[in-house]
Length: 276
Image 1 (spheres, rainbow, N blue to C red):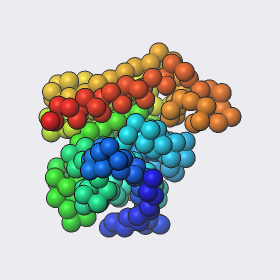
Image 2 (image 1 turned 60 degrees about the horizontal axis):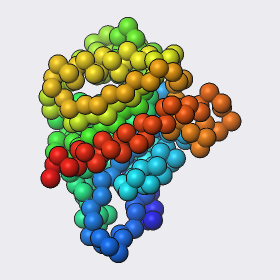
Image 3 (image 1 turned 180 degrees about the horizontal axis):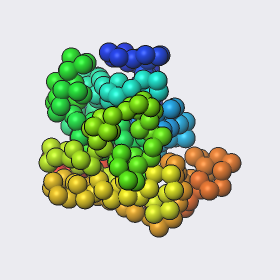
């Protein structure tokens, strides 16, 4: 396996810089020229931090599926929208720049986001063809478009069922209602959104399941290709829902929810098959 770190500097960063950590599988002798999907993992943390539980362990899981993987440690508060969006857009473009060198299928660059990271992932899926995503980093819309989104208990809406803390950190305390609506993603879905794999739990009392339901309804109305799984129980922030990511928190171990990993593997394979 090859390992690298790339610093990302974009206009508007107030503190620090974003970092893309790259994990690349070695070519195999039976198929040395094989191009693999690459998944950019975007951890949650309420736009206050980037959760360790939703970063490297998830990347390792995608490597086990036969995908390359990256983890994006994006800028959080006091940085404001659209800094993190531009960092993710830059990360996607960088992956495509290196597609030949890294043996990446340039048409299978996926983004997997958790919680507030799910909001960020869904934002690039929604805004990839709008100037706010690409002009500030001197790229084109096609360079920053993800080929698929994997959204895990995502923050979506700034409305009735919102997670207030995420939007406060993303936008600032004195945000006008109009700006809140501008990043309430269920309001901005179009038929240009890439395919989506989406999962949530009914008993999530931090980011209500209505976030995913509102997104699914918007995708349904706009004929977006999506797959959704709603589990009857499980707290917020499950990540892989395994002992590996639960640590000493028993409520983070949820065997029933572990199936999302197998289902997303099938989804990735099916999406690639449809493109052939």
